[in-house]
Amino acid sequence: MLRITDTITLADWELSESFTRAQGPGGQNVNKVETAVELRFEAARSPHLAAPVKARLKRLAGRRWTSEGALVIRAEETRSQARNRELARERLVELIRQALVAPRRRIATKPTLGSQRRRLTAKAVRGEVKSLRGKIDDID
Image 1 (tube, rainbow, N blue to C red):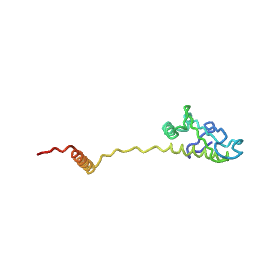
Image 2: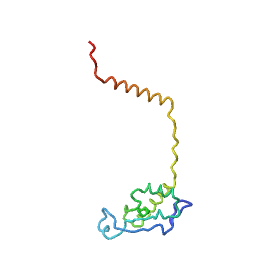
Image 3: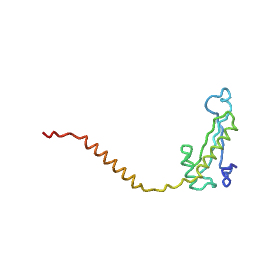
Image 4: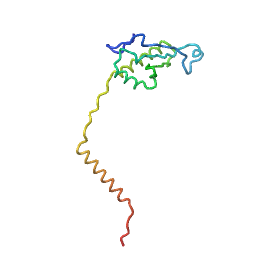
């Protein structure tokens, strides 16, 4: 069980972990110990998340969202498998918490009368500058 909020907890069947050898430096240890963690969360099949939350989660996940509707998080920062597991789970919890927050609707506002007048006078000045760039006629 993974607790997201007081009301939302994820069941064990929704999460699966696989371990691989980490990339980068690590001496002789890196070639024999599988410390990197790949946490897979079956988000599309999860009964604990509402449809709008899943949609926001998919947008937030980006490339980490698979075609089967799973969210894959990889952690390989530390040399400890246990710490990498904690990091992956923390990232998942943080991502789901971000998806739970619904964005506020933007309220369209009208431009003020002063801003409209300033815009129009600026356009008139600019148009005058451009019209003066033309050829000068010789009146002799």
